[in-house]
Every structure is written in C-alpha cells, then in structure tokens.
Length: 270
Length: 179
Image (cartoon, rainbow over all chains, first blue to last red; front, side, top):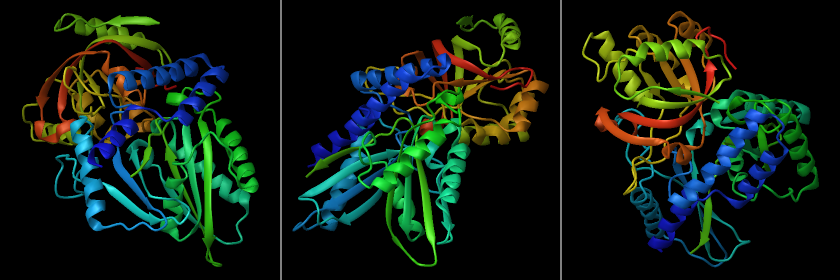
C-alpha cells in the first residue's frame, strides 16, 4: 500500500487532472485577448513539462490534504490512517516536493511534518478510497465564510461569491475553479466547499437547480475580466461547483474555497 | 517581444539595465536573461531586521532583482525544482528598506498595495509578474542555482539564480503605473 500512496502523491503533483486540462484547453481556444491566450498556452505547456520531467506542476505542493472514505462493511484503524499519512509524507520527500510545513509560532524552518486528514464513512462506496489534494496557499488564503440569515436571497449569496472571487484576484492564479459549500455548520460549509473541488469539474451538477446557479455564477465571474495573471479576457474561472447539505432554521452558512488553475488531486481504492 | 539581456557578473551593465527598465512600460512582455535572487516571507523579515541593525546583508541589493519564490526540492539530475512566483502582496510591508538599499526589481504574482506603487515610482524601480502556477516551465529557464543565505529556511532560503529567457510582464513600471 505504501507504494500505491507514494505513486498517488506523484500523480497528484506531476499530472494535471484530465477534467481540468480539458477546461484549460477550451479556455485557450475561446480566449480572444492575445496576452491572456499566451498565458494560457504557458499553463498548458507547463502541464506537459511537469508530467514529462516529473517536476511539480506548481512549486507550492501545498499542505497535503488527505480524504479517506470508508465504504460499506469496511473497518478502518488508527494504524491504517497512520500508515497512509506516513506514506504521503515519504512520497513528498522522495519526489523532492516542497517542505512547506511550519509550526504557527515555534519554528520558521519548514519541514514535511504535517498533513490534514479527513476520515469519512460513505455507505455508497465499496472498499476504502484515498484522495490526495495538494492545496496551495495562494488560493487557500482567499477562503471565505459567511453566515447568512436563513431568509437571505440567492442573489445576496451570489454577490458574496463574486466578491470572494474579486478578493482572490490575480494572485490566486486564475482561471479558478470555485468550490462552494452551503449548509451544515460553519466548518461543514468550508469542508464541503473544498470537497466540491474534488469531483469532476467538467460535468454538470446532477441537481438541476444547482446546475443553473453554477452556470450563472460562472458567467458572472467570467465577466469580471481578471483572466490568467490578471491580464484580462474571458477566462477568470473554469468552473463553479456547489455542494449543499441541510442546515439550521436560524442560519445559512456559505463557504467559498477557491482553487488556482493547477487544481491537483488523485484518488485510489486500497 | 522585447529582449532585455543582463550580462552575468558584469557590474558595468547594471546602469544600462536600470535605464532599460525605466523605459519599459507596464504590460510589456519581456524575456529576461541574467541573475535574480529568490527571497520570500521569512527571508524578507530577516533582511529587514539586518538592515535595521545596520548589519551586513547576505548580498548587495543595489541594482539587483528579487524573485518572490520558494522552489521545491531539486530532483536528481536537475538544476532546480519547480520554481514559480508566490503572492507578492505578502512582501509589501518589507519593500521600502530594500528599495532604499538600491533594489532594482521585484518579480512575483498578483497585485501590490498603493504604497508599493508610490515607492516604485519614488525609487525608480520596477515590478514584474511571472507566469503564475507554471513552476515546471520556469524551472527550465534556470541554468544555475547557488545558495546564498538562510539555509535553515529550506525553500525560503535565498538562492542566486541565473536565468535565460525568463518570461516576465511589467506589472508596475517606474512611473508607478500598473496593468
């Protein structure tokens, strides 16, 4: 299993996801701003070089976020979780990925010693699914949460999301994928927003209502004219993905988690 | 594209480089050849502390270019790992003391504060953006890497890089105008 996990770390950091690549190619084709189109060409070229030369797509190989989904009739032990985390860390070390982890106050000397692990039980799946999501902080720093009133209009929520994207700006490496989590408690909304980035981003939302909202938001964001490197153009966002869960009658938490164009993740069944 | 060439280890050229940069307008795309120094958050904090204490700096900032970058480790057989730009605005609060020491240019990604625009104008400096999220591509433009200071900071250490045809866009020109 160690080898499998280490391989997963490589895949996540060296090979851009197919769904993301296909949206980037589409963006390149439809861009009419020449400078932005050149920037998109470099992004596509970068993905090729990264894969061919086994170089990280981005030097910010992130804080490794690990999702462990435990399926029906599966048991999971602390020993297994520990082994997965250790394999992720050795995958980072062995592939010369960046040591980006520090204690908030005690040390400025970066190491590999830190991952964020989420363990969940999903009756819908078989086996145990492990996902590695290297989340860079250029975009993570722009995460936002707002606790709306339950009577808030959808328009107010959309405005908040647009504001969040404006706040992210060129430094978070557009074109973005915008993950949105709505419902639960404050922490649920932010976790959902992150999880929204993990599914295929080039497919429709199965929920017709959410699909409509996603499409409308995508259109609005792409009218902001930020574009790759802030050069403007039609492509500020590749996709908007929304996930919802039930919430409390007194509130409506909305979390926004933005990903840069280098949206990287890889999943296996162990 | 304009091609600006800064010759390696030739101090005679420094003035002409500043003159060339002064003429570059925001939005210009440039291929830069020459020397740049990596420095990001912690290195800036340390440099500014050294300046305050009037101590010797790890390298002479005059007419140099700082690249806001923390590369990955270097894979076997390679010169450098992935090495794209990091968010410049985090370094905004450290800019003035460095410009006072003669820093010529900064390379990073994203917006800068209003104050930094004014400082760039005041000190006749320049701010470039490099292809963000393209660390693998930019690694191919680096022909040498040398550790200069703060080894303990790992990826945040200061490295002297020789680069060839490094793609840049002028984001704030010496008149303080930005794209």
